[in-house]
Image (cartoon, rainbow, N blue to C red):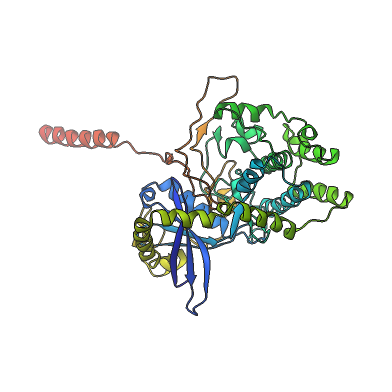
Length: 457
C-alpha cells in the first residue's frame, strides 16, 4: 500500500460505492494516478454485502493480464473499505458507440474485430484461471459484459473491468436460483430465464456487443425492462448485412454463432471465438492494431472533449467547487488512514464478524489464505465487482409461462464513467435466526419442576 493517497476528483458514484482518482505517493517519492473505490460506510452493517465485497477483492487480486484492469491492493480506514486499482486514462466503449451513433455510422469493421479480440483475450484468461495451490480451474464467469465495462485508453489499449457479478466456484457467497444478474440488454437467454449460466453467457454478451459495433444498432433494447428481457429470451438476430453492407458474410456467420440461443450451438470457449475473428481478418488481408483505435479516439477527443471521464469529472467538480473541495479534504483525511488488510490484521487484535474496519483483524478476509475449492465448490456463487457497472437488485425471474414478474432497478446513477461504482442493492443475509422462545419455555418448566419438588418433599 502506498504511504499516502491524495484524492484529485470523484470519478463516479453509485448506490454501493464511489470511485475517486487519487495520486499515490510512495516512500521514495514516486507518484502515480490510481482509481480508488470507496465503499459507502452505511453499508458496512450489511454483513452479506461486506462478505461479497471482500470476495470480489480477493478474486480481483488474482488477475494479471494486459486486458484486465489491475487491482493493486485492498485496504481499510477507520470507517470503510477501499479497493485500489489501475487508473485507465481514456474512455469506455459505451461512449465510443454513442459518439459513432450521433454521427450515424458504425465502427469500422477492422476496428471492431480487433477490439472484440482484445476483450476475448481477457475473458479467455479469466475463464481459464487456475488456483495456484490446487491447479484446478476457479470457474470464473463475468456475467456483466457490456460497453461500460470495456475500457479503452487513449493509446488504444482495451481492458475489461467490473468482475463484481462474477460467479466463481471459490466464492463464499451463493445466489438463489432464478436471480437476474447483469444489465438486461446484455443478458444471455439462459440468464434471462433465471437458469444457471456458464462462460458461454459471457460469449453471448460479446456477440451482442459485436452486433452493435458492426451495425450501429441496439440488438435487444426494448421500451421497458420487461420488453428487453423478452427480446433476449427470443434471441432473434436481424440481418446484419441489411443494416451495414460492409459486413462480410463470413463475419456475420461468426457473430451469429456467438448469438445462438442454444448454448450448445455457440462458441464454447473465448479462444475459439477469437481465432475465428482473427482468421477472418487475415483472410481479408486487413491489418489493424492499437494505433488504429487510438486514432479513432483522438478524433473523438477533438470533436467531443467531454468523452473523457476525467474531463467530465473535473468539470463537474469546478461547477460545485466549494462543496467539492470540502468533500475532497475530508476524503483526503480518510485516505491518510488507509491500511492494507494484511497490515491491519498483523497489527490488530482478534475481532468478530461485523466489526468496524478499524477495530481489529478482519474476520472476513485473510489475504494469505489460499482459496479452498473443496470448501467453496458450489454450483451458484457470485461476487460484486472491483469497479462495477450499473447494478441490478437481485430479481427473481420465473419461467416465461408462469405468473407475471416485475423487474426493478435502483435509481439511475447520474451519468456513466469508465469506473462505474457498484449498485447491487442490499440483500437478505439468508442466515439462520434462532428463536429464543423454546429456551424460555424450557427454563420456566425447570423452575416450576423445582418448586413442585420442594413442595412435595
